[in-house]
Image 1 (cartoon, rainbow, N blue to C red):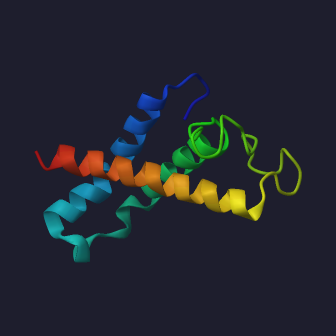
Image 2: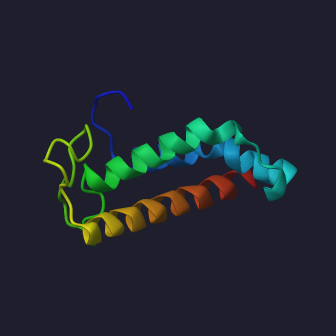
Length: 111
């Protein structure tokens, strides 16, 4: 993402769009024939979702409207900004965001 202000809705849309290639392969070729072609897209999805949770406070119900890391990662706040338990919660929230985006993408492409 370029620098700027992004809404939660926009970021969720970006997640769904980035999953499009992977989901399209699953729908066309089946889950057993998915290729490695979407690897960069998957890295982008993880990066956006992680930033949504750990930097931009989009998990306020579970983690609070708090930034757990700087734009450079944990290094901006010292060796580790969050406890292992908080890191686990961040990972869970990232998985939920990605799962929601996957569902939106698959539903959209299946229409």
